[in-house]
Image (cartoon, rainbow, N blue to C red; front, side, top):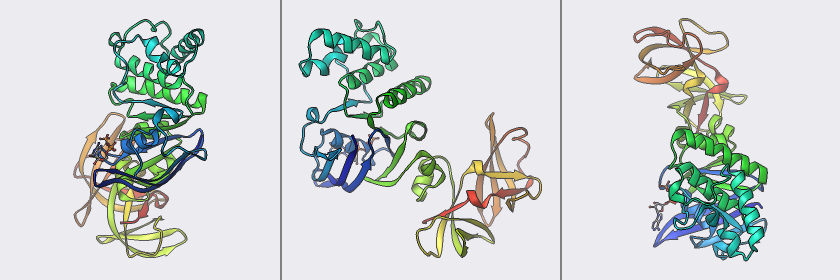
Length: 353
Ligand SMILES: Nc1ncnc2c1ncn2[C@@H]1O[C@H](COP(=O)(O)OP(=O)(O)OP(=O)(O)O)[C@@H](O)[C@H]1O
């Protein structure tokens, strides 16, 4: 099923939380809504599910208008942050719930429940109650319950947030494996950029009830179109720059008394822009580096992080950037050192200010 959202408006009281949002999620896609608390991710997900009514616009699943349908008629499976299991039912009864509601027969239910539990790695746990399970196991039960009804669309609202870091990575893998196996169109809500980047086919970065940028994880990370996206996904140095002459996709970005060539990712002609430099794309050396543009800099602070070292560098004119070095000798510079900051013009981008 593809999901088509067109001109959607969602209102709480008098306030439009989502206004005129349009979005297409292709069939089989693992789609993530990523954004900070309060940007409207959950509201959009719950509107797709049918728990929150649309005040305007249309939602359709592969061409079928579902805007006015209640959740149980939308063929969706849903997984919540707090698991939402029935505490007085066993694991097997929890997973069987949707099949029972559909009036399926006992042997068929037992077979499907056993198969679903096996797929999420909970073979033999059917007789336990949720209270006798760990958080990760509970979320696996919730996943089995959502998938056992063979939904056309899987909707997940921060399903990993209550789990510790190690479990989160394990369940992340379980979810993506099951999603790929069933090729089920999935909408996943998170505020965690690592989850979004590692799991998704497509990410919609949300801000104030709108999708600010839609793209693959690689596009969102390497080619953010606004400062908001650059800042929210990964760390980024952002600098207001004046723009000099543009030439074949490149533009001269001027700041303080220095300037560099950078990729021009601005939609039109502009006098100003925002230069975005990822810390890991910057190089530091004692002298000029081949093929890179060099700026004189002084090490202000150094933070040793084991696999890498993060340096805060003064560029003069009260400008600072953070550069991260990896590989042998990454901690080889000290505060006060005069260095050369190397910038690859292809990895420096100017976007709208
Ligand atoms: N039932 C409600 N009544 C009124 N306002 C609401 C209601 N639910 C959410 N809101 C408001 O709508 C906006 C979007 O909330 P939503 O829960 O969709 O954001 P979110 O991005 O999912 O945030 P979080 O990550 O914190 O869950 C917020 O400003 C929130 O305060």
